[in-house]
Length: 382
Image (cartoon, rainbow, N blue to C red):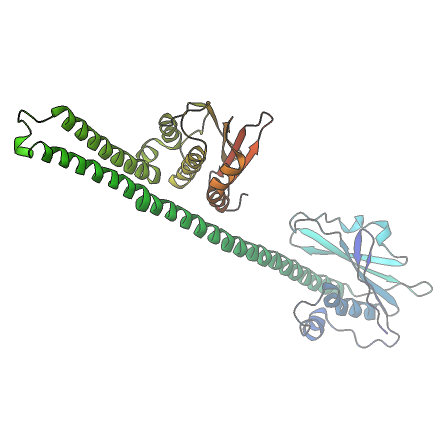
């Protein structure tokens, strides 16, 4: 009975003992065609090599044949292949008579070991058969490495598909949140301001009617002061409506961002805040529009989430290193839970773009908001 086994001693052994009644020895290529090719896909390497070793064993008469493989390294291109004369002593069986290197290109991938059992004459195998077997083993090893590499690529592709699905889901949620925010302003903020303008206009119209109409506002009993005050209120209401509309347009598509880049656009944004801002650091040279827009809108969202109106100074620090942009915003009076809730959609958006956002409480009880984004948007640098 033929026995196939694998023993690990800093290497892989695939030895085969000689059967008592040996059939005719065949050329190595014929063994592959008749015994190896019919094996189903996914057959372990040991079972594929076994017919070739069995054939060599038959050729030895009463000896044995083994395949020695060094330990596998992390990368198929960086294997610690030892020369055939450096096969570890622990890997050499008693009675080894000959070792033949198995090459793949310029490198050695293993060794065929031929030997005899104690009390039997030295094993002798034709050199041509040894060379053929070594070549066939090389092909099988190459195929095994190719299959292993393909499986790794398939696993990587599956992971990328899962990432793509997750990122797409995150982006859909973020886009929906942004749409609702803009729609909310258009439907509530703009409507409220238009109602204020309408109310002031009606008050002005009533004041004009009370003065005898537009053609009679210069009559003696008219009150110019009241008309001027009502008109000033109307004008202020219109100015507020226009300014808020400009703020929304500027937030969605700031002109300074296209013209000057994220750094200067953020400087302009910081200058328009009610609270003072202490700025430090730098974002460096300009990059692609998508990245600059991502950094700008992320910082703008953080500043918008912090308490408005009069308050202590905000500190904003910009850095750029290791292929990513990073911003740290410090607020002595912010409330962590409220800021986290307000920035949840932005955190998902940054994560989908390969960045991130984190809200922390410092030792003094203030807030530190950290956000980062890679220089190149791939969605994989989390």
